[in-house]
Length: 216
Image (cartoon, rainbow, N blue to C red; front, side, top):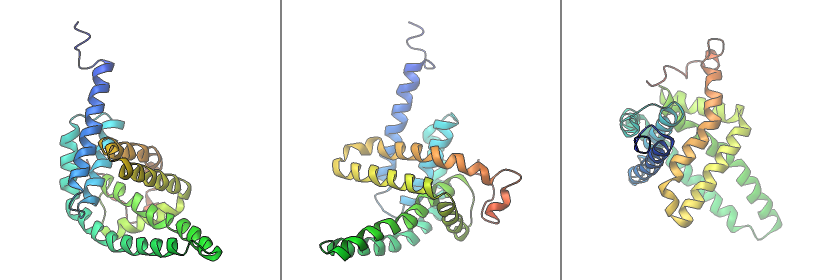
C-alpha cells in the first residue's frame, strides 16, 4: 500500500504530468484572451515545459508564473509588432485563396503558402527565444530570422506542426486542454538541440550581440 500511494512512483508521476499539461494549456488559453498577451504567455509556456518537463524542475505553475511576469513587457511589445504583420499576411492569404479558380491563381496561392513558412517560422522561433534568453527586442527578431533560415528544415517542421495542432484545436475545441503544452514540448525537441550550438564557448559569437544570459 505504501508503494501505491508513494508520490514518486511511476503512476503518480504520470498523473502529475497530466495535471501539469492540462493546467498549463488551460492557463495559456485563458491568458491569451486579451490577444496582446499571446507573446509573453507563449514564451512562459515554452520556458516552463523545458525547465519542468525536460529538466525536471519542481513547481511547474510557480515557474510558469515567474516566466510570464518576467516576459510580460517585452512579450507584449513583440506581439504588438507581430499582429499587424500577421493581419496583412492573412489578408494576402484570403486574396490568393479567392483567386484559386484559375490556373495562375492556383500557382500563386501555392507559392504564397510556401512563402508564408518564413514569417511564420520567425514567430515560432521568436517567443521560445524570448522565454529562454535575455534579449533586446530588436536583436530577438534578428536572431529568430537568422535561426529560421539557417535551420530551415526544423523551421518547416515546427511551423507545420504548430499550424496543424492549431487547426485541429480550432475545429474541435476540446484539444485546448492539452494541445498548447504538447506543441511547446514537441517544439522543444527541435529547438533545444539547436540552442546549445550558439551557447558553447566556440560558437557564442554566432549570435553576436543577440544572445546574452539564459533566464535562471
